[in-house]
Image 1 (spheres, one colour):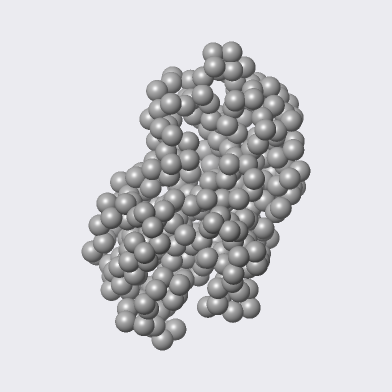
Image 2 (image 1 turned 60 degrees about the horizontal axis):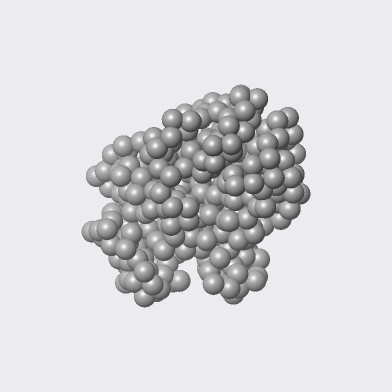
Length: 326
């Protein structure tokens, strides 16, 4: 069985490939749903010699099947957000410590230790339901923070605005993590000029407002908060890792996560840089479910391995990750 310490110690392409192949063989042997899918495609653990040859499981399988290795029971079940009448994805997580290691180490790679920040989570649509992996992550970051001001906010915009002004005057490093429509509501109703604030949007409008292109959204938010750029987080229910953008619309993954772009007309062919296609994600932290997922997001790779989100295959199924078009 692959060791989680080895997954989080990946430091180059060769080691990533070795770990991806090890995880693939482990999941082929232990994940009945993934193995059946691979067998239907004519693949087995001996037909794959490089991670780019690994077949990816369509993300809709998380709606219809329990994607978890045989003999394991979920410690928690994360569910996707969505509108009434939609079917929801379910991610059965056998080991929460892996998720905690993944989001903690990823956060630290991009921002430094969480205890250095006041962490403010403006996530009303997530707080109003159960089973959100984002809420779980935010709660842990808030508890890790060394500051009593850290916490969740539902729709207390005026109170939050006053707190931001106070934190600015006290020169405290602050992250405002928010669902997009709530950040817009706050920006329009109670703007705060706080140039050192890290504003991080985590997803779309959740049916609350019309969708906006990224450039338009970020223009509104940068103006309202007096910041130079808006950060973004790319994650989803079916993953245990996140990628981050520091304001240019380009997302960077941690070393145990990789994005490939597939041809929209041939899902088994990958495209070169600067070509738009479907996003496939390798998330080696998904050790006990499936690490190789074919998403419904559209995007393209840029030089250096960064990637851009350009929309979705099916805009009627808007949910759970960074869904802005731009």
